[in-house]
Length: 122
Image 1 (tube, rainbow, N blue to C red):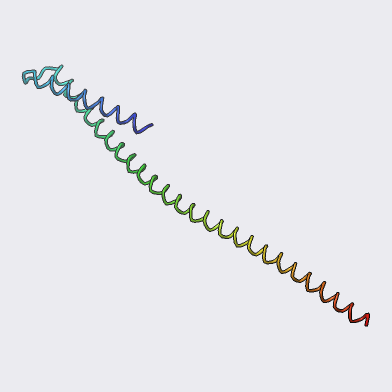
Image 2 (image 1 turned 90 degrees about the horizontal axis):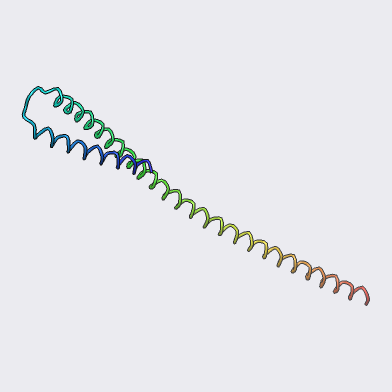
């Protein structure tokens, strides 16, 4: 938003300066106070225009840098999400293995106990 405002302001200054130059070209060279005032005003506006251009270029550079950083952060975030999903899958797999092991151990104990009881009845 700030950048757009600065660009509009710069365009306005440039068109105003162009108009003033055109008006000054149409006058005869002399030391007219009005012409001197116009020249000074034109110089001020041109200097202000240069400062605005510098500010616009600086803001555009900052925006470009921020956009690149945002892309890098997004890529890292995507990588972290993928790792998190893999970790969650690994945890679920480990839980399933543990449940299977617990079930197998239970069956083994049950069978062992059942077999032991069969021998003790003999």
